[in-house]
Length: 634
Image (cartoon, rainbow, N blue to C red; front, side, top):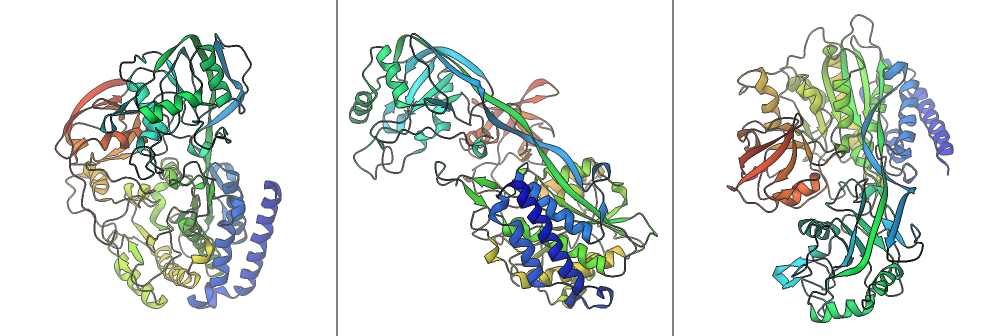
């Protein structure tokens, strides 16, 4: 189905749900809260937003634009007026930049080798490569591995400085399938990133990778350029070439063919690295950076006209999109539908807008915002707070619905109950009326869209039904949603929002007790913040105490969004906005290189960290600390 046809279907579905809901709610102002929300209607929204046709709603994708159309039509039908940019429901911003492979800009040519070599058939740029050009003399470097623990080193007695290396993918094959190095489960030495790091450490300027002939000898397919893997920039450009091209290179250099070299490397495990005489290569990678546009959906349900004050009700509607599974990076891309995270919260704001529109308008205005870019580092909510489409001083409270689709009495948490003096009694009353059992969360999690509002001293409440095995997995689908539980949560927040919207003053923000002064409050909030867990990663033994800017990948280094007060980075003089470019001997190209480097250290290690600050390089001496201990229930 084409995108335009699916958008038309989105509008028809939206109108169908709206007409059905409107028929139910024509006497909405007189109806009790337990009649305002229907589980089937809520689940219908989730099914649509989490359908395969939307492709996982990645920020900048066609699927998320279809989702935006759907949300807009529901908000419009509920009586909301546009509150985005230029009289529209949309607020746009540049979320990040993505890499695309522009075929006409990509080229490869050899000095000393005849023939024309075609992109996508004979060679292809791998997506971990920067937009760049490279050239240099060619050399063969075996598997491109330096593994002293396994007594294997393709760089032994070989000078790779300034050269482009032809290397084999994978690692030397071992007859023992259970072997740690060369077995059926390859070690980290076979990873592209590891090989790129080793090549860069020895001064190489690029890699040509080829499939070994003794692995699936009849299959020599080139990888597709997969943009979902492209946010990583490895230390040298990587190009995959076909066996046919590799053998042509080796013949021109009077070297044995690929099969002979592979068999000898696997059996003897001794380096065969050598310059390929009189051969050089020039490559234009064809990579181009293009902006990814994020769009928040913003609609205002006007109050009774007596005040300009606002209550914000938000939920992020983006998710991870379609990507290859982490456990099988060469496998088929899978759709991450994100039914709970966060089609559930998005369905929640749609239904709350409809319910409030069906009743008597409250005193204050209600601003409904569906944020994009949350999965990239709260980009949409940060942009809104920095560039509000209303007077931010008019916002009296913010309610965030993120993952409300798996209600269980022992797991449902409402964070922020202590953020305002009135919240505790208000939430308790509403929960009793709605028949909801909840826990008042302790430390406010930082990894969702309430956080930018909280940093502006706006009292926030965050509803969260808890993590589960399907979190950030393709299996987070609509059939696991508990619509009856979600409706109970909506009844609770309908009551809370209604009370907030009819207040003549407040809510009164609870002052942080330990904040020494106003300048310290942001740092204290960050120090206490515990982010919603990101995609699982290997645990680090050390803590620097920073919040990286996950949406930043345009320049070398890792940009720091915020430095946490009292942690190692702050003690060493690091500041918000610094860009880390080196940790010890490790160059830092991006957040992945940062993670790799930090794995090399233990608590108490002192390390020189080089940052770029206001265009100047600054070297900081920092003593790394042990990670914070997490609570058992988180």
